[in-house]
Amino acid sequence: MKKLMTLCIIHRHPNVLLGMKKRGFGAGRWNGFGGKVEGGETIENAAKREMREEAGIEIKNLDEIGIIEFAFKNNPEILEVHIFKSDDFSGEPVESEEMKPQWFHVDEIPFEEMWPDDIHWMPLFLSNKKFRGRFLFDKPSDSNSVSRIIEKELSEIDDAIL
Image 1: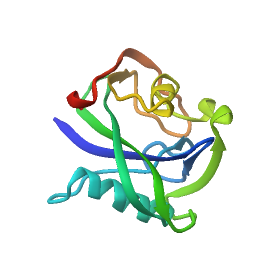
Image 2: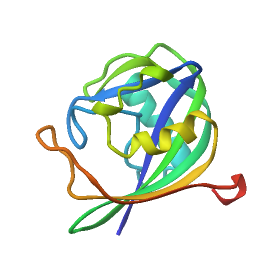
Image 3: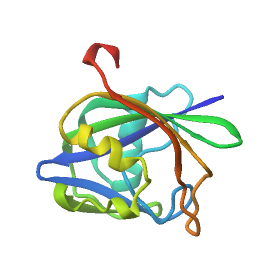
């Protein structure tokens, strides 16, 4: 069973906008902004809605740059995450109940406080290379435990394939 999700990161070189997840799945980690695609919603509209809800900014242009499937050992659910990049938005990032936004220089991305897969695909993202991947984790994460990658596949792909 697949669950359709979005993840959006603002990249205005040399900075990226990440958010500290304050509650729920992945709490205590820096991440992009995103979440579930609601019924009747396009993936792009879901990404824009999540940015508005979580960081208070309006996205004007989105570029889908990757798709990654995330799975957890002994859990049949697969999270199909569509990863978007944008540098075109209006408004100033503001903290929400769910996320605390912060700008990071690309050389200072806090990978040690992020999901362990991010360090693998972020260089492709920052280089504007399209990618597809799959990561299997030993367990879901909560603030008291660290998920480890037990299988990974990641490859750069042609634009037309995404």
